[in-house]
Image (cartoon, rainbow, N blue to C red; front, side):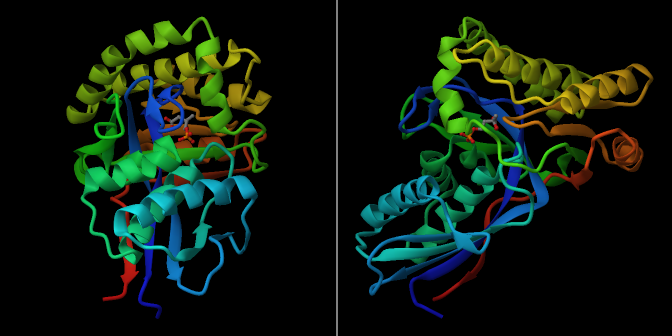
Length: 328
Ligand code: PMV
């Protein structure tokens, strides 16, 4: 194997309290903090090789040359690593996701978190968790949350130095399951990078941001005390607030499809009927349906029977980004 090579694995994550809007769009310093769970089994595997003979960085995504925008973002991260390590070589990056790309299951989060670890190790750096989280954040905000394990909070901070994520509880703390109702597998129309830039055009964003510390505190407490009912209420409110901002920005962003609303209404009815379950939706039409592990088979079954749900992926809380292989 090449001496400047490493491969890392990183889980996707689902935000319980969402990140939408930046105070610094270049560095991805968010307008407010967020909380997420890593998703075990939904992962990116990313290999990096710095090659003295390479004339440019190269990014192979799921076996094909990546689009120019993805290559630019990866190159910017590689450039930060080269600066830190005093290295000049270009890199070949090969990344694969084991779940559909661009459907609101954050492939950029797991992909860039894995890239941050693989690239820094391949360059001979041993970064601590906060530094790795900051590096991942520079490529994609939510990627900083895939670096630590389990239940994770991203403190917004106000600079590159103090905007990073850390674990608030390990993966084994609470066996929640994310049952992802896949409604569409086509690539989303407006990438989240562009969406973040529109957040402040919504008259609702300022109120949403001002209220975020309150929602973070409720969510944190619900996780630490394993209080599902409190979690359900704050998670749904937070998702609704983010989508309200999206729908009221200029231009308006609608990520939902008719089936998205159908699943939302079903989940609300199930909870009213006594099944502890709640929904949250990212920048795509798929619905993440959360429940405690004992209810997962029943929820999966109900979702599978719901019209226009193509399939259901399930994930328990996942661990931190880790190396698969490294060369001494
Ligand atoms: O990290 P980005 O730029 O892909 O933004 C992610 C935004 C949401 O997934 C919609 C919310 C979140 O906090 O993950």
